Length: 155
Image (cartoon, rainbow, N blue to C red):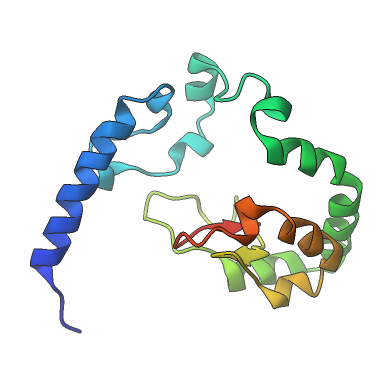
């Protein structure tokens, strides 16, 4: 496989500029690392950073529209999740088939599992066939169904 080091260096320089801009935003302290390639998911496992700085959203139900949507549909989502969990090994298998490739500093697969239902705005049928009502609900949300960012997903 041929690697284009010059293009990679250009992308890293651009990313460094975006990262510097991100670090100037409120709550940027939640992003760990001085350089883009030092960022990892450890904040998920070390909530002291959130305790020090407080939550990003002061009122999630008001500040984050999808939060009230998820809360309103919690009974349906919970019921379908419980049906997967009731089948031994089902959730673990869905996690293995849909997980993101994380950095070496990311969470281990034995302590953080996710069964992605959407990736880049597209429903993942293997999971959605197990939770059709939840996927139908999520498909109505533009944050999920219209998100085309690489690596993005709803799980």
